[in-house]
Length: 79
Image 1 (cartoon, one colour):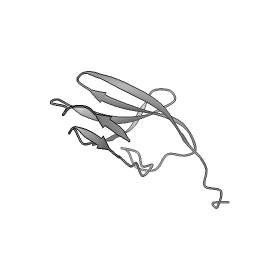
Image 2 (tube, rainbow, N blue to C red):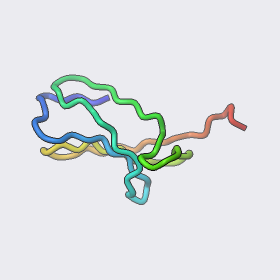
Image 3 (cartoon, helix red, strand yellow):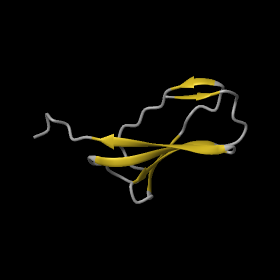
C-alpha cells in the first residue's frame, strides 16, 4: 500500500531489487492522489519467479523515492 497526497505528473515506478541491487521487476502503479494497493506475483521481468530471500521495493517518483525491505518466505506446504 502507498499513499499519494497529490497526483504525480511525471513518472512513477515500483521497482523490486535483489539484495545486491539488481532490478528484477518493475511494476506499474497508479499515479493519482489517494491510497493505492499493488500486488506482485513474485515473477521476474525475465522468465521465472523469485525464490525465498530478502528483496527491496522502491517507490520512485520525480520528487524522490522511498524504499522498504520485503522478505519472501518458502511456502511451508511445498516440501
